[in-house]
Image 1 (tube, rainbow, N blue to C red):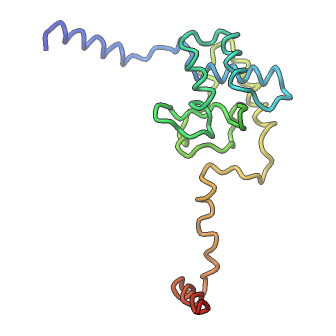
Image 2 (image 1 turned 60 degrees about the vertical axis):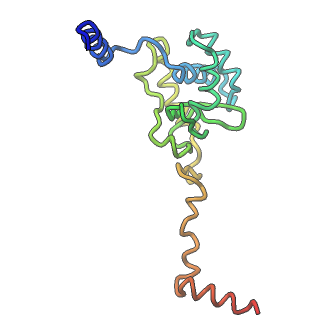
Length: 185
């Protein structure tokens, strides 16, 4: 490696390894903020269309890059109960109820591939939107599913595993099948 290339490589490695404070919102953060503002402004609505979220992101000027990125995040990348796509980071910021989106709240079910997905935190909010965090905590507690409601973070079919084990409790499975087949003739 040439000395110039080597020093350039050393500089870029040092630059990339330095943690700088976040100055720009991610698309997921922009989508979360816009959806939170929509909820706060329209408390009776249970969800919002992707177009409404896109419009609020634009109105707040939260995103200046490709608008398709906001669409994809509101449609699937940031939606907890949507299947995880290869390019997605497994965000859990929104929740889909048909065509509508609302904020994800702790206790909501999510795609198992998003188990370690990132949720919104107060530290990710710019100073201008920090007042949304206490509102969100209050909103998410008051809008939780009632206790006892199914809040599984696993596949509902897998939850059925071993539910019929009492059928063969005193009889081996092979004997049970043999006994059933005796009536066939």
